[in-house]
Image 1 (cartoon, one colour):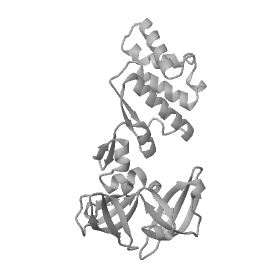
Image 2 (tube, one colour):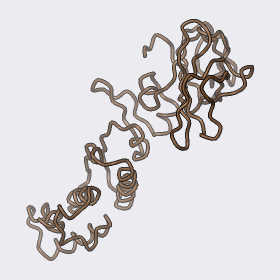
Image 3 (spheres, one colour):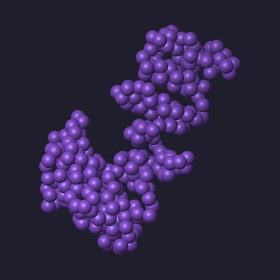
Image 4 (cartoon, helix red, strand yellow):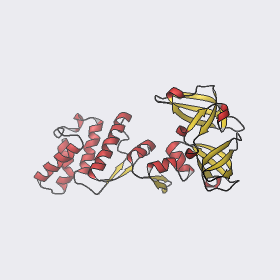
Length: 268
């Protein structure tokens, strides 16, 4: 079938009059940026255009809810990023409710007004993208959305503004935003790689040696081996112009508002 025949198919099955089908197909193709493509066959379309035709076929009869199950999984990153914006724009313009299933964490953050993070068939947290990323309620959500760094420690004290934790491995004191946790509570400290910063060794809550430093365009992804005991490898993502180099001695610091704490008994 041609593009127009593909898009018209749901209306044809519903017995919609031909004039109405023609009008609605034309409107829908225009919304998806496919005006002028109605006479083409699927083999004459790019992968992204084929995905738009599939979207049009769902949009043309104006359903109240659309389910999209990993619709962009087979596309390359550049095209996937482009279609994410286009799908969200269409969704907002038409006022659609879309349930969008994806295993791509970045795609979920970009596409969604609200996200349900699932684990073993249950909802672990249902929230806005910002709340999920910055205020995860469980270690699983913190790790799933941002591959968080975890450091064991124990609460030393809480003030009106901060909760202070002494880290087990390096013995350093780290300030987190205030959590309602009693002094002495064992905790897992969770910080996203992009929220940790390299600093002078004397200025951090711990020190370590940069083992890896990988250039990825706008970012440098660094792995820092923390001093002391069974020390973990902390992952940092820093702007490329200010990235540390392998072998460098650094301190590690973070804004207290970016530090989440989880009582150890919650599990990982």
